[in-house]
Each structure stands twice: as C-alpha cells, then as structure tokens.
Image 1 (cartoon, one colour):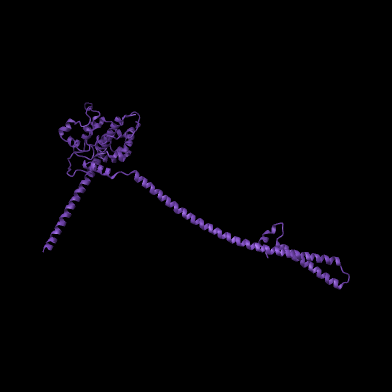
Image 2: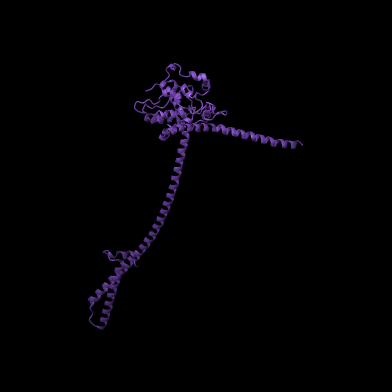
Length: 132
Length: 259
C-alpha cells in the first residue's frame, strides 16, 4: 500500500515519463537499450494508457505523446524504433506536422490581408463617383 | 332426402336413413302387391283366407307407419344438415377473421419491435454522449494551455535551428522530477534546480518561466494515478529513471539543439 505522498510522486513521475515518449530520440534510446523487448515494460506501456482519459489527459502539455503511446502498443512499431533512420523520419514528420497549423494560419492571414486590400480598392472609385 | 352423413355412415351398425327408407319402400311394395294379388284371388275364388289378408293388412299398416316415421326423420336430418352447413360457413368466416387479426398483430409487433430497438439505440448513444461530456470551459482552457506553450502548433517565427520542440527536450527531461531522481546532489531541491550547463547556455529560463510546466506540480495537486499493484512483471523496475539522464549524452540527436 502506498501513501498519498507516494501516490502523488508516482503521478508526477508517470506524467513526465509518458510525455517523454513524445520525443522520438528518447524512443530510439529506449529501443536500443532493449526496453521494448522487456515484457514488464510493455505491460507498463499498456498501463499508461490511462492518460487517454479526459480527467488525466488535461494535465498533458505535450499531447503528441498520446499518439506515440498508442503506436507503442504494437510490437511492429516497437521493433522498428531501434533504427535511427526510423526515429529520424518520425522526428521530421512530427516537426512538419507541428508547423502545419502555423503555416496554415500565415496563409489565411495573407489571404485576409489581400481581401481587405481589394475591398479598399473597390471602395475608393465608388466613393469618388458618389462625391461627384 | 339424401343425407351426406348417412352416406358416410355406411359402415356403421345402424342402417342409414336412406337404406331404411328404401327397404321400407320395398316392403311396402311387396306387401301391397301381395294384398292386391290376394284381393284379385279372393275375387276369382270363393273361400276367403281371412287370417292372411288381415296379417298382410296389418303389416302394410305397420310398414306405412314406419315409412311415415322415417320420412319425418329424413326431414329432420335434412334440417340438421342445413344447420351444419350454415355453421360451417360461419366457422370459415371466423377463421378468416382470426387469420386477418393474426396478420395485423404480427405487423404491429414488428413495428413495435423496430420502434423499441431504435429507442434503445438512441438511449445508448445518449448514455455514451453523457459519459463523454466535458464542460466546454474546460476544453477551451486546455486548448489555450497547449496552444500558448507551442506544444501542438509551432511558434510563428520558428526556423530550423530553433531548439523548441513539440516534445520535452533533453534539457527538460533532465530537469524534471524523473531526471532528478538519480542525481544524489539534487535530492534536497527537486523542482526548480537548474543544471549548471543549461543555465550557462541561457536556454532553460525560457522553459521554466512558462506558465504551465509540463510537470504541472501546482495544477495537479489533488491528482492520483490509478493503482497497479506492481504487477508488470517479476521483480522489474518499470521506469529506469537513471537512463533519462544518461540519454542526452549518448544519443546522436538529429535535432539541432544538441550542445
């Protein structure tokens, strides 16, 4: 039986650990040291799925880790993580995805600015006509 | 006068009305013939045979009586036959009514079963929705948290070379509770202790001053993890915290934030 203090600490540790899984380099590290071949470790990964529940998920700062956690449930994925190329690829894709919304937003902003310009240009000749 | 029933009863011990009628008629015919013969004879011949013609007369009367009775019976039977036919017709009508009702009941049952099934499905989905309901305020708060810290969307001025990432970096991992666990010199000061090199590099304060730390000690004060009773495997330590620190020195990192 663990005390409340211990449980709180465990909460902290598990929170940190599950978020570390979002780091592809860390995944490569773990894979190369054979942790993913360890059955208790695999069971622990399954146990960590509780972070998907809303009452726990709201503490996650890096939600990418949940996706990785889900993928980690599959043995094939765990095996592939030993390759540095694989994790490099994951890292690149993750970064690109991360930048996706930023790029989309800049595009939208540019479009909006253009629209405003056009609207202004249309207004000017009209107001001139009215004044006359 | 022919009763269908009596035809069917040919094998019964009692003779059918038709047979009896016919036999009585035959008797009558025979008797009346005899009577007439006797009368004819008695005309041509003098000595009367009184005994016989009385007998024959009596038999005749008797047979006639029988015949009348049988006729009555036949009429009665005919009436009953009509009644039976009438009842049979009514039976048929009732039968068809019942079948009609049966069909309608079946249809109604089918419709009701469908309605009940759909209602149950609706209830199920209502239950599901109710279970998964989260206050919109909380969702917005959370969305604000993860967006403000650039955890799910890159900062607008991000260029390759920027150390910020959508996951905790080596530095963050080392400075967290997990990373501090196996560092004996830091045991007194777990949170907020700055590794010397990171401070020198000048990058750490940026992370630690963010409103929402990824370790979230203040926010999660009351939160406890689910019980697991240490059943992951025989005598293994599930997290190898010492390796969190060792990692950043070993890994050949593809990201450009390595020292």
